[in-house]
Image: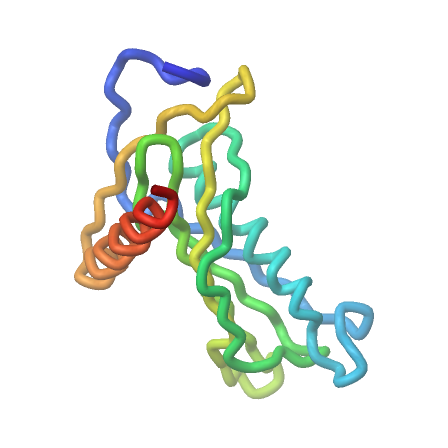
Length: 163
């Protein structure tokens, strides 16, 4: 085995155990000429929160492998809060798929909007810098089970592309 994985079976973990949330205020220096947050800044938040969720799941350092289906649905304006949530929805031998959902919140009215979502693939890395095994995921709710099935479909499609 590579990395720091041992011969013992890793304990599976619930999706809820990896949940991570970040809330920040969008300032003018975070925005473009339209006073909306830069897309790259949103992607950086997604990458950061995906890493936190993945590390909570495997309790190891992780690196980003890919970002799949990053979608921008609505802009986030200066003065609004950006709310970024993530959880591990599926795990393979050394990688995890993390679903990231981003909302804006108008702090004066309380209005919240879905602004972006993405699937990020993160890989656990051992002390030797090589991929290391991660625990399986236990989806509990119907939504988590659906996310798990879709993640497996994407995984199989990516695997087929590599052949």
